[in-house]
Image (cartoon, rainbow, N blue to C red; front, side, top):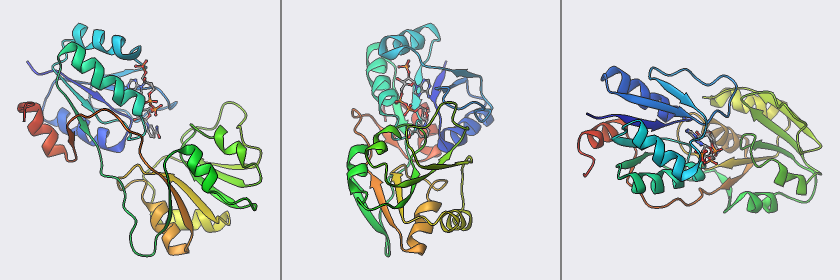
Length: 246
Ligand SMILES: NC(=O)c1ccc[n+]([C@@H]2O[C@H](COP(=O)([O-])OP(=O)(O)OC[C@H]3O[C@@H](n4cnc5c(N)ncnc54)[C@H](OP(=O)(O)O)[C@@H]3O)[C@@H](O)[C@H]2O)c1
């Protein structure tokens, strides 16, 4: 009997959850629990960490999981790394369902950064108005450049004081569109955009908007995770679920 653990937190995971539910497959959806009101899923859903590699391996055995699909965000490197090691330990096949990274196109003014620290360094020294489109994690590192005004777009209103002195917070949940993101950047007089190379359609609007407005984008490259099969389409995941060895 197939029983799937789907590690979620992305639009792609929600799309796959719908397909699994429609196909009547036995699957559990897992959220980290980072947002106050996560998107509800058409699958039984659990919320919260597993307790590292050992915790996840124990969960896989206790729940009789036969397949794991890691559809977490490409920057959720800890969860992805843990899932590789836990699946190895538990002897459960794993695949990642991941969107391809964005590529710069004509007219894009991208500066590539290998890390958050690299992105901080890539920002100018003179005061700028930065759309810091990286979610709520890793904000503190930008305190090294307190001269900038930072526009943050977050899913939930921050509960604690932000680690940056000069911010405007926009509360919104994607997907976003180009017209809206262009207007947002114009309204806030944005001069620079910082983005994680998440890939996918829902978060790409800011890049098109930046290109249209002629703004530079500091693009942070994806963190490395151990090797695992990576599939890019729902149909490929569905095929893998019936023949994981392929
Ligand atoms: N990082 C981003 O930029 C970003 C952007 C959009 C959405 N997200 C989503 O937000 C969640 C957290 O991302 P992150 O970057 O904080 O992850 P992370 O650093 O890779 O993971 C940290 C810990 O959070 C727990 N965790 C993460 N994803 C989980 C899931 N789907 N189900 C259960 N536990 C999970 C695990 O705890 P234990 O070790 O206790 O198991 C993991 O070790 C992920 O689901 C991701 O898809 C992340």
